[in-house]
Each structure stands twice: as structure tokens, then as C-alpha cells.
Length: 494
Image (cartoon, rainbow, N blue to C red; front, side, top):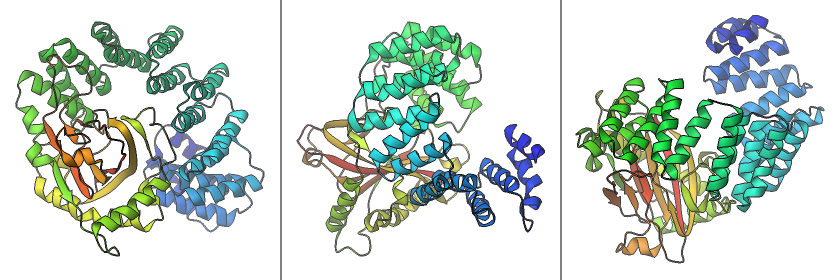
């Protein structure tokens, strides 16, 4: 058993799976064998098999609080929050009181939209382990999204810092909250103080270089990014950041050469592809149009009325009611791009709601039509992943208030991304000023000379827009006293 645990600790879970499989398949495997086997299965990306192993552990050792905790943790990873909550409560009944168990509980309650319960559960985690960074960060995020109170959101992280938590990670989490609350001055102080205490920390150098870019101090940002590059010469995220800083300085050719290096290191990196298009546009390289072929790669589809509804308007009305029911947050997640609104944190695929489930059936035909239209081909970062099969890789809803919008961004973990319009402000439908329209091609930071949007799509209720995840996209603000309700998801090849 110690050999298998050592393999897992060394990042060699596949070897551990092979070692443990015959032991776990026995008539009465030990509890430790099942625990290690489930952990190894998770490590090789087999959560369903890990869950089956957890369930077998429960069947053989029903009075083990650890077994119930492990079951809850796997269920939580698989977004089965209601069952995860029940499993944690069984562990509690068996006198398990570990901070890790309380964290699984807090996450399940958060996912189930029991925000008061989640707040209290996070407090219980930190009562048992004050320096627990993951819990402090999540607790702070929850407080910010509920209230917009930056000071309340910072308190769990400040307490974790006093208890000896990781300096750099805490500082970066605090900086994200301060950025969300428009406290740029304090954001800089926090990061610089952390760097003084942990000189040369790569993440802090990146964070300060990004802050310098945000504040228009490109020369300082380049110096910091070069320091980060010296510490991690093959880190693609560093090269991407350096590219954006060089573009802000007007050093387009250097920026282009830098991002080409990044793409060579990781050809499928979505951030690298997005910035390659931007740098190519700055130097007049044909890669810009090759990557940002709007006619080919940005495609709107109007969904068919799902079965069970008389028309699309009736369906969208029911869908809006279902979505508004789960919009419990007043403020945007600190790391996300929306401004003036809230975003759901639950993966919509897991909701037991007829209207929401009908949506995922309705989008199957447009996704397949998109894959057929863009085609295949090994030479392009979009088409080379087109297997003709897909899976949804996360889904959420955004409710924007008047004057709300999305900062221009891309989705670094996606392949295809989307926007689906449930409720649209009248100003967007009128179309005169393009209020509420989705735009493409405009980077979020300064580029010298400036690069504005190149392509727009007009929204309307029931319209789905599909596009490459590496493509810059944002939303024109709308000024009418209405809200805008959307759904979105990422698509990955299967």
C-alpha cells in the first residue's frame, strides 16, 4: 500500500491504478486499498470509476466516516451536490469533523444555492484550520458576490495570512477581490508587499506585471515580465503577458515574435492563439485573418422550439423563470469579465429543471451544424480538434443590469464558446447603437495603435452564437432600464 501511495504522491497515478486494481477487485479489499484506488482513478481522469470504488467502500465499511467523506468529495467533483451534501451529513453523524469534510459541505451548499448555509460552513472550515487557503479564498469570493463588500470578503484571507497561510497565493486572491471592488491602489500595495516577503515569486511577478499593464505603466510591466521570463523561460502564460505589454508599447514586431514562440511551445493554447491573432493584426501578418475568419467561424443559430412548448416565446419565458430562480448573486465573480450583473456558479447541466434540460437538447443540432460547417484540417488550431463529436465543458447564466456589459475576453480552457440570448433589452433589438450586441476582435488592454472591434452579431431571444474560444469577444453596454439574461457554455471535442 505504501508503494501505491508513493506513486500517487509522485504524480504517477496510472502506475498506482495498475498496482491496486487486482487488490481492489478482491472479495474484501481493505479500506486503505479502496481509498488509494479511488484516488488513483481520479488522478487518471476516471471519476466514474472512482465513484464506483467509493460506493464499494461504503458497502463494505458503512460505519467509516472517512468512506462517506471520500464519497462526498467525488460526488462534489462530479457536480452531484445534493448527494454530496447527504454523504457529508452521514460523515458528520459518524463523528468525522475534519476541515476537509466541512469544505466539501460548504461547496455542496454553495452549489445548491444555500448561500447562508455555505457561508456558515466555510466559517467552520476556517475555525478548524485558519490557514486553509482554498477555503479562505472561496469564502471571500462568496462574500463578495453576495454583498459587494470588499472588506468583508478580505477578512477570511487576512485571517489565513495571520495564521501562516501561503503568502503569494493569499496576496493574489486579495488582489483579485480588490480589483473587482475598484481598489487598484490597495491591489498594488498588497502585491508589492508580498513580493518583498517572497522575492522572485513567479506568480507575484506575473500579477504585478499585469497590474502595471492595467494601470498604463507598460515600461515597468515589461521589466517585471522579463524577470518572470528569466525564471520560467518556457512558461506560455509569461510570454502571453509579455506580448500584451509589448503591444501596448507599440513594439508590434517583438510582440509577434514573442507570441510565435509561445504558440510553438503550446500550439493548442487558446490564450496564445488569441494573442497571436492580435499581434498578427498589428504587424499585418495573414495569421490574423486565418485565425479570425469571422464569416467562417462566428455563426448565429436560432434554436427550434423544444418539444413540450407551443412556441419559442413560451419556452423562453419558462426558461427565464427557471434561470432567475438560481441567480442568487448581486455581484460578478472577482476573476470573471462581466460588469454590472451576476453569474450563476452551478453548472446548468446538473439542474433538475425541464426548461433547462430542454435547452441542452435544443443546442445539439446547432453545435453539430457548426462542426460540419467549419470542417476539419490539421493545419488550423480550431479545425484540427474537430472530431465530429463533442461534450459540454461547463455552462452558466449571466444576468446583466442596466449599463452592464462583458469586458473583452476569451475562454482559455474551451474549444468552442457561445452566447445564448434568453431576454434581450429593446435597445439591442432596435440595433441603432448596437447596445447589448456581442462584438469580436477587440483586445481588453491598450494596443498601440488601437485595435477596435471588427465584427458584431445582433442578439435576439432564442439566438445562439458559436465561435472559437480563443476569439476576443465582449458586449456593448446597454443604457435602457432593462436587464439582459443569457446562457453560455463551452464545447470540447469528444
